Length: 194
Image 1 (cartoon, one colour):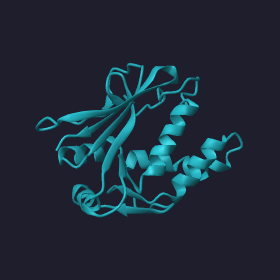
Image 2 (cartoon, helix red, strand yellow):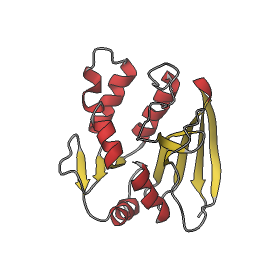
Image 3 (cartoon, rainbow, N blue to C red):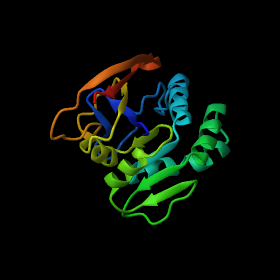
Image 4 (cartoon, rainbow, N blue to C red):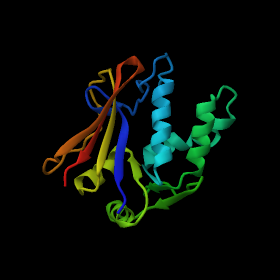
């Protein structure tokens, strides 16, 4: 059975995007809100350790608007070049009923997302990561998420898209890691107690 990991940058007040899907607060040290080199490397290592990435439509659109050619940008750093190449090669599944085409080693699922995630999770293989609030929320409510990785940025946005969805019952978690990155960004990883 594969492990399913939900990890994203999150504001101190619990949002992955501010009102209007604004992610400009994203955890950076500079005015462009890009993450520190150390945090970027951590995200790279997370993706490298994963066998499959699961995306909701909005996150897919964000990632696919930059990373397919991220290594070809004139100002791309060596880390960004590596990330772009890894992202293109990484097997991906996008769950959406509103888009009709995906590319870059990606498969589109338009049917029951929870059933497909459960099927993928039951297979043999390495970890899968899941991203996107709506998709992860459905997996969360179905009890499919094994680990949560919150990269908390010290900013308050007051509303938007929450990291955690409303649940019918609580989920008990074990803290497995904490780590501080430049700029006061804090990683906390939790495993689901089963």
